[in-house]
Each structure stands twice: as structure tokens, then as C-alpha cells.
Length: 295
Image (cartoon, rainbow, N blue to C red; front, side, top):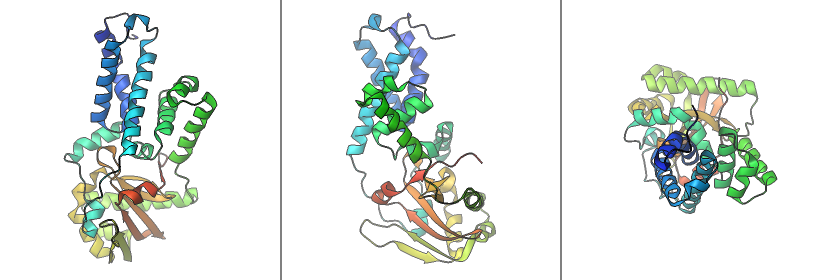
């Protein structure tokens, strides 16, 4: 049964709350911020003349979109504090989520990789893509929100779509092979299987990881050395997801949907030969991330 927009404001709003929360979560990538946006939408409804609203769902969707757009722009205007220095191995696996299992459930409900890649878009691109591609809102309704023509808004969504694809540079067959290697590595780490981790690493694998901003990365070599580090931090890799990183298959770690670390791999056959662990905020913003299609 469709929501009854003729009901009292609180009851009518409650009927649309899940929809608004879904829009806000995909826009913001944070459940707490999404709930804040929904609360602000409720306040704006109470300040409005409800009797003059013909289509409450459309009105509320527009309101929540504007709120989220303002929040995204405010977020983009701030810069994250530099990440503290970490040991090389810890930098690859440390996770800032207080409750990894809970965060994993939340992320999987939408798709962590999608949320992280969406965060690389500009606020206008993100809004155009989310509202049109995920919620089927027409471009002529989205256009006023981003202060562009419908045609320009269509281009925003198209550009976002291309960026979400990650501009892979390898062939489909090569990407499939890389994906098998990375997924085997991830499964071995999660399962605590030391020999299986070693098996997917080149014996002389070279690993470098960011430390303090402006300082050279830390470097180590050897499959068994890095595998021991992987075993030590196995429980922290529960949130890692396989994505495209600069056109090749890699890993990201994004507690609460915020990109904190990326692992960029170089492959030699069916093994990982080099690993670049990126945690510096400036370097993270330079990465081109993309969502892999379902296997």
C-alpha cells in the first residue's frame, strides 16, 4: 500500500523515512550523518506548509538531496588530519573501526566498494548519479538541485558512471586472473592460512607503505616476512574489499565507508610481486578507484 500523504505530518513522514534514509546513506556513506540528514528533513517539513505539498515523497527527496549536497560540500571543504605513522605491516592491515563486524553488515547492505568510489566523486556528480541511477529521479528534477540544465546534469551522471567503472587498463581475462589472485590472498589472510598467503606472493615480494606525510615509505621484502604480518593483523582485514585501483585489481579498507587505506598490487603471473600500501590522505585522493562487476 502506498504511503498516505494526507495523514498528519509525523505519520506521513514516517512512511517515507526508510526511503529518505536510503537516499542519504548512499549520498553520505555514513549512517550517523544519514540519520542527521533525515532529522533535518523532518524539521523542514514541520516548518513548511504541508497542505501546499502535492507530492510529499518527491518534496522530501528534494529536501534530503539538498541537505546531503550541503553536507558533502562542507565535507569536501575540510581536509582530513594526516594519519599517524604506522609500522609497515600494520599500515596494511590496521583498521580504525571499533566494531568491524557491525560495520561490515552496514557496508554490505549497500556495497562498501560503491560507497567508497562514490566518495571520489564531486558532490554534484554524486548527487546526479545517486538520484538518477539508484533512485530513478528524472534529470529535469535533479537539475535545479545542482544549478545546471538537465543536459548538463545528464553529463554529470555520465561522468560519474565512467569514474565508477575505474578505467581498467587490463584485458577482461587479465582482470579476471588478477581478481582470482587477490581474492585467494584475502581468503587466506581471513582464514589465517600462512602457507596459502605465501603461495600467492612472489618469494621476493616488495612491499612499501606510507608513514608520516613528507617521509619516505617504509619498505620490506620477502613473502614469508609479509605473510607473518598478514597473520598478525588478520582480524582487521574483515572490511577489506576487492576493487579496481588505478586500473588493476586491488584492495581497499574503508571503515564506516570512509577510505582509509588502499593496497595497489603489481602481478607476476599468478602471484603478487609488489604492493603499495597507500594511507596518506593526499595520495588516496589521487587514486582512481572502480567497482568490479559481479564475478
